[in-house]
Amino acid sequence: MVRALIACMLSCLICACTGVRPQVIHHYDDWLGTAAVTVSEQEIFRSRDGRSLMTVRPVVAMGPDGRAYGVLTHLGRRSGTAPRIDRITSGAATLDYTPHDRLLTHCIDGCQRAEVGVIALSATAFFLAARDGLPLRVWDPRGRADGVVPAAAFRAVLQAVDGADP
Image 1 (tube, rainbow, N blue to C red):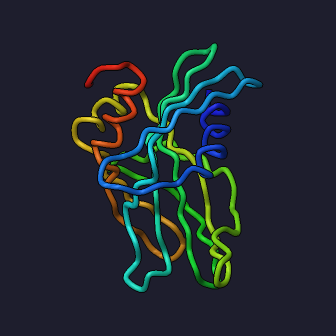
Image 2: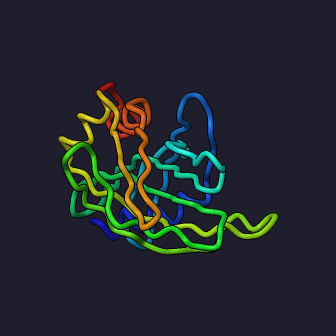
């Protein structure tokens, strides 16, 4: 099911929108027989110099093996060094993070280097995040950055999947 999250991540990275209320995005993959529900990207931190930016989007992937819950990540950096996430934590817990690819993206005035990946969550953790949000600390060789995935983004995904508020 992690493969379904990663496949969903690639197709969803194309559909990036921002706004006060997260826009729900539905994706169906005929080849894998999976469906995914996510929201528009949510910016959770930006460096003071504006060179680093992290966006996230909660996602639920559904397929023949059941449901998988997670958070798609995109850490971009406009500098000489590419981002390389060592680990992601929430409080004292180290989260199950899988890097997927390191890309050159957003090539308008020079290219931005990015790492995309997925944080796998249990259903319980996803539902708790829908209530409280999900605080993240992202560790890379240049230091760490803190942000919170908003609870409203998790709630929007759950409502689109189950049709009711969690």
